[in-house]
Length: 440
Image 1 (cartoon, helix red, strand yellow):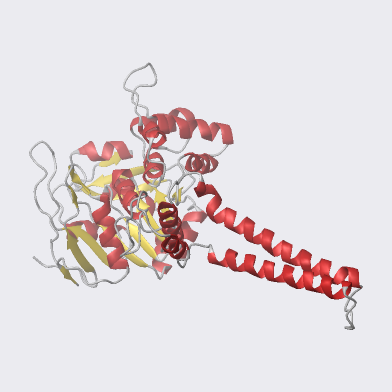
Image 2 (cartoon, helix red, strand yellow):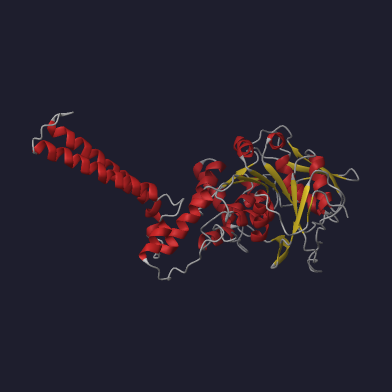
């Protein structure tokens, strides 16, 4: 189902010449929302026929008792039938109308409607993180469900996002922009425009258009929340992107030598070994929407993303960790495919998990999905592949698979990662190495 369609669904070309009966059968598939309206239309026609029969009966002065005055019986029943027919027309328009102008082929139209209905019924997934890793994950997951809530960190204080945060007082928009584009079904010029970064211009250099758009929309609408909603409409986003908190937070790290590093953008460049991170202020309030999404989720995904600077800031928001503990949903930690110097240099998969458990709670992850392709990124990258080893992880299921993006060895391949996630969610027995604990 990597293409977003149920397994076995045909991929007929729009130009395929098929019979009218085949097209009819395809449009009658379960889940398209068409059959119900055709049945209502048929019922309406039947009721109209009954109404006409009442009129005919009274005109012919048959000796049968009248329930109502003769001139009202047939008219009322006939009107009811017309009402049902109009309801059916309205329902069919809602199901087909917006799509009729976009597709010239009934094959493509039926396939698209079926896919959209399938995605609307997909699992409720909450993805927690930030940075490039989260947006890559979302780009793959949207082929399986529309019911995605991305909970994004607001601790970013570097680059374009940091500048807008300091100068305009808005939430750092960069991670939100990436997630909006990742969940967008308008993957054309508008999505490309949102990712466009100015490389010159006094005051513009370094900013991306999407960041400026979200910041401007915040000013126009009066709230960052409304700005995200309006930006989602512009990009035809299926899913939600929300912050872990509506409060501004800063990230602080304590290194193994006791040194304190302030600010998310300074931590990776500190050159030391991180012992602990925490957020300031520590007593902020979690976004109620984030807490509700976690409580309602069928599947919770933690990562991928920078362990200490993208994932931890979300989990350390008061209330988020408690919501995860209370959730009955399956929780999977998606381990990075490569180490990050200054943050997770030399880490194994087990090191990532233990750091996560140390900052949260021991049972935060039911499963871990790790990369099994240990080919090194190359000398030009200041990074190493994260080995799926590092000691025993009791009560944690570890699944490994080749998750590397061939075009970018430091990142996950969106389709591969999403496919493994959905397979694990559905409890499929994977061909790749799988064990309750890995000890090497």
